[in-house]
Image 1 (cartoon, rainbow over the protein chains, first blue to last red):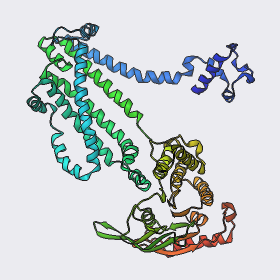
Image 2 (cartoon, one colour; image 1 turned 90 degrees about the horizontal axis):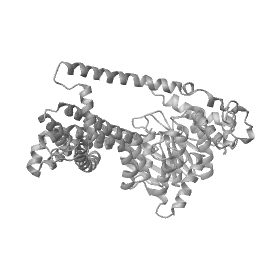
Image 3 (cartoon, chains in turn blue, green; image 1 turned 135 degrees about the vertical axis):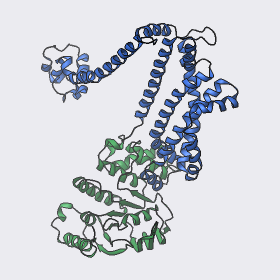
Length: 309
Length: 263
């Protein structure tokens, strides 16, 4: 129906003589382009916006109202708690945030930089650590899923190391790399590689036998099997692994940077705690949350692109 | 050639926890070139196992399988298989699904344009030229099955193997596709081995019906020659005396001699 409206709208715009607003139904049929002949009479064009999209608007508000209500309740609770403690209230924090985000990219020495730099530095570490983990974890997952021997070989190691708290790896990183920044990247790497290995391997194991039978009866080459069957079949699983991994990586970066220092959102939190600037800590918490949410949503969007059936 | 495809003294046993399970015993079947043979039997009698052996997906425990004078050692493009559940790759369009097969068989010897032509020709053969760029989830179950047939036929196989290709379809679509298959086979002259559990389908389509006994250790119970003239018309056969005689023979075998005790 909306397509019909659009087509008709296009038609009226292209017509040299404007169609009478009140009586569009009397347009001579001969003037209509062939494709538009079958369309319903264009009376709906004049129905008010609310009537035409009434259901959509109502649905939008039905979904929006609880969200707004929840956020409002949260802010009110926060304000009440801040009244009876040293915690800064929403208004104070908001003013501080306006200031912080007003100049996100200043540099006043190695330990005093704008929030923009802090976020970008943290994202950079996550990007490198996570990227390396993907580069190793995804092919490894494919091999573990494909070859039972490899799977049996690696499964005890993976099961043993996966539940280890990411920060426990930090001393090893510091020892090996003898520098804070690579150590932080190492922690991101080691904590985000497991979900990718495990999900990719599971995906390879779950490839429907039907598809593999097709590969067999068509006698496809190993390369074709990989590019046309294995990879597309595993892709959704892989993206789940990536999504989980980036979630973990972003969780861990704050803690890692608190310990390693340098420019980054985690270090910023710790620094502001030392300055007793609690507003900034709260701003950092929201910032971390929002960036994490955006990363997650972006990957969800990507994953939806590769869903079949 | 009298024995274009032949199965000689084939046995099939599967290893289970309770020991060896004999699925098929002393199977002897052969197909002439251009012949349409159906395998019919109760579910679990191993007719799909036998088809998979001819396809090369399973190796017999003992016995010999031959296709065009050569032993069947594994799957090959000389035998096109259509599975019950269409098995189209959902991330490829109908044309790409067919192209995968075409490319494999003719990719080394023909130009890209020729390959594309073959793909379209195969789709047009099953009357799906218009759906070439659609993905499997955008078309109906009957259409998917037709793409599966197009994919198998596009390889120009010596033998077409159909594993209950219409089993998952509703009765009307099934009848329609049976008629289509009759026309396609008449046009291409393919040798066909088809697994079915539908008596009418078997009599309508086949030159011979191979009826299998119940498992375990299933074997060929009897073979019915379907001597109805071609081209066959579904409606004309409704009142055909010979058709009902043949149908009766198959039913008698399935429901009197081989009635499943616990079915």
